[in-house]
Image 1 (cartoon, helix red, strand yellow):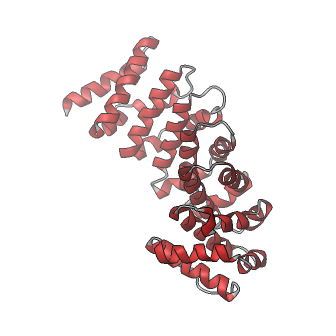
Image 2 (image 1 turned 180 degrees about the vertical axis):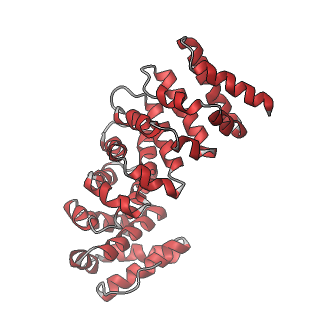
Image 3 (image 1 turned 45 degrees about the horizontal axis):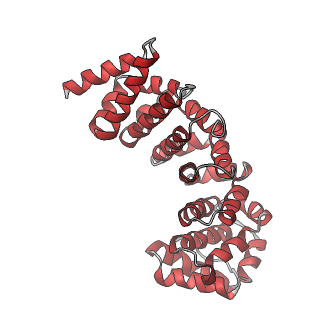
Length: 305
């Protein structure tokens, strides 16, 4: 154990070197250590690496930026508190995400978005990260950009999902245009994994009053119906997400949503029944509640599932 502590202190000291080669070599070693040895992650954080790693996210060297971002991601898997207590860390991550289309390397963008998702596993960090509108804006821009790498889109979607898990963050995401970006992605990207992750975020942001108008602007209910329709061949996870989104809309929306749900076409109703019969336990309970809404004309009842 003492050897690991000495190694960590030595590498962190090298991060402050005036030699770019020395710094680069230390970054590469730290990345490898934190990848292969979970025990070393907290040791490296306690040795003072995180401020140096955060500063390196501003580097013009893609190799250095990649190694710093990957090391932060590795540390976040085991030790989230040291990252969140480091002043300027979120600003550095925001910098990488904000320049996703220009100066940032794709790998650093992906690692930075994945680091956010890792941090957001701790629900106490969700309001803090959600309050950083520049981060949410950049994540939305990543999924809007036509030529964003698929991995960048998936990591951005996961980070948005983590942010949206905190109810008070949802209105802010709507205000930043998340609904339009997400539904556009569903319509334009046919990859199953992307659609599943996108609809997972849609289901979360549907759970706020602001979602009704935002979804109406992009014909969101109709898109969700299409995903539920057995003829479209959506995956089970996508259908469960669509059910969850419609249920959240009913819970938070007004009469307009209720009328649309009441008029749902037969193919979509069959999709709800499929989830009710073949979905997960949570999906089944939501499908039962949604089917009751369709059949009863969206009367008021307990939506708790």
